[in-house]
Amino acid sequence: GQNIDQPTEMTATEGAIVQINCTYQTSGFNGLFWYQQHAGEAPTFLSYNVLDGLEEKGRFSSFLSRSKGYSYLLLKELQMKDSASYLCAVRDRAGGYNKLIFGAGTRLAVHP
Amino acid sequence: DAGVIQSPRHEVTEMGQEVTLRCKPISGHDYLFWYRQTMMRGLELLIYFNNNVPIDDSGMPEDRFSAKMPNASFSTLKIQPSEPRDSAVYFCASSRSSGGAVGELFFGEGSRLTVL
Image (cartoon, rainbow over all chains, first blue to last red; front, side, top):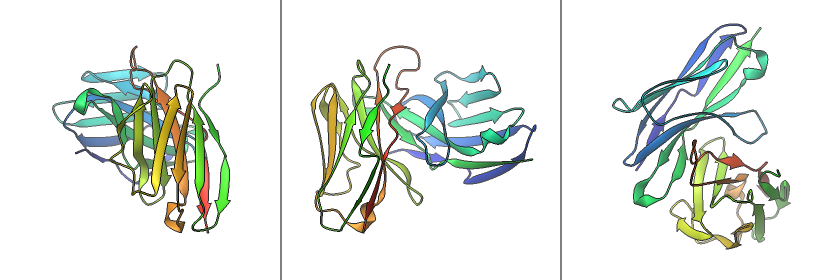
């Protein structure tokens, strides 16, 4: 089966940097995704890692260590609009088909 | 290019009634997923299809839930009979099986179901 853990809530200050961690256990790991979800809206894609290392995309970066079953999402120069839930999702390829399993999400509140 | 289209956006029904949720995936996508989201359980995968064929329905809660995909551009999720604990937001998502961020899901706006 799959198990994905991430903190439930985090708070941070506008302009600061925040790191959201995610640990996972899965039998057929085939990539890790981060999604952002604003309240009342659908999740939207932020980043994708399949190899170890850091992927940078503007103010957002995502890191993956496959041997440790660990990823983090780094948000720099926080803005009020970054207040949202951040979902870690693991793609599992058990049985030859891709499916995406989501963690419970981390609710980030950015304060002035 | 149109995104994933779901209907209805909101549905309020009474316990025991049949509920049908509809989804049109993005053209050219060969995977379609149905998820359910609640505060308590987060985003749960219910069932997914590849090329219109159901691959894994192990997340479907019970026999009251069924899903079909009669063609590449349409899928339904049906709940019969509905119960108050089925109240949730139901998301449909689609993806393609080739390319860079393979498996990146594109979500519809969701169908918010309330069962009284």
